[in-house]
Image 1 (spheres, rainbow over the protein chains, first blue to last red):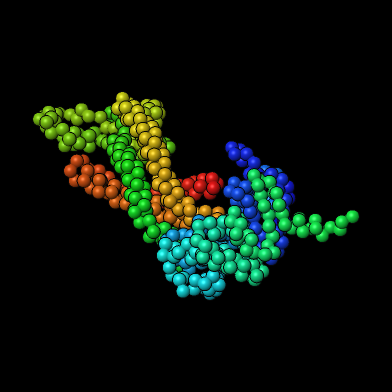
Image 2: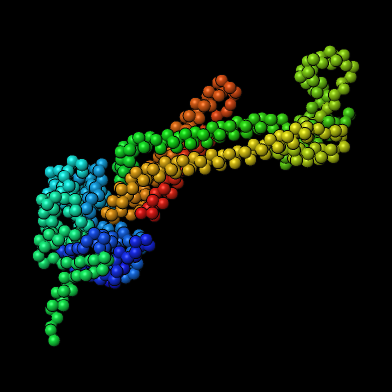
Length: 232
Length: 285
């Protein structure tokens, strides 16, 4: 699903953001990307949705490879993944419903199908009753739910979340995490960047990938594989 | 209603002030260009009026048979530069002199014989009303045996040529300068509209919109603003023309074709300005 192979990303001014990072997120998995701020989590996510290209190495996302993908194919990949951010990134002058519909409209979805699909995801995130509210009329948690609905409306194979609870209080955070678990339970892989270890501890069995100063320092999948190796 | 049209309408509705501002900016840039165009059109008309008087006159020897002159006139009309060759008889010349020069009325009354020679008045086609063509035609006319003398006011025709060249050069240089300024101002205006919506563009990209899709509403917006600006500029130009025509000098306005071309140019500048602004923005993010 998502495969990083010896990925490095170097910026001309600030140097290496990622150094020889390799990891693998499987279909249907719930994976955490953890580490302090500046560890390279956001860079890893940006590489995943092809906002950037690696300096060396290869990133593969559901059949798309950074080694081969052209600029024209990027939109096609984006339609197969959902993305949410700490700052929600909603359009302020459109209602919740319009914000979600927008993601379908830009992909050229047939008009009659848009309304029902939008209402379905808004119901899924528990906001069916607030469809006609503008972002400023919604709480932070509700805005993030709208963003999640927008990310889900194209039925993505994987959901990328960059510190999705960073701006939320504890209660709203719990709600969003529960929603992410539900989304994951219905088959969508989730890759979530967070520095909040409480969230990570609260989710047993999740795949854990930890970065430090751009290097991979822990991968629970590798750890498990090592333990399964017979001891000679 | 198509999505592109709806998004464009939304852009106008959400930022009415900025939209009005950019239409006004475009309108005034094109208005300046339009004023200059009016000056050019009027100078060209005036030069054209003057040039119409470029005429080569061949004075004929006395006693030239009228058949000879008529046949020669036909030959002359076959010259590529010549529009018409008119035979003016002695009697007609005198009648014209009496009419045009009333102060010499007495002299004309007392004449015993007609001192004025007959002539062939040769008018040139519009594109040949310059010193070189007039001289060439005059030379050929001198070749006819019955032609006594040829006149075409070579000095003032040369001056007219110079005036025409200067007016043409100034027109091109100043016109191009105005057009470039208009394009830059319009481009900047549209760039503001693009920057104002950069957040929206970023979000469109995140959810998988293609660059073509993102570009289309901006192009339509640019085209509409350009056309609208063109219409307003035409209105302003007409106002200016009406004032000048009423209070200063008789002037000409653009022909319908010129007016339509002007509005279309506004639309084109708007379209190209948007294409450049959005293209640059999409490449930079």
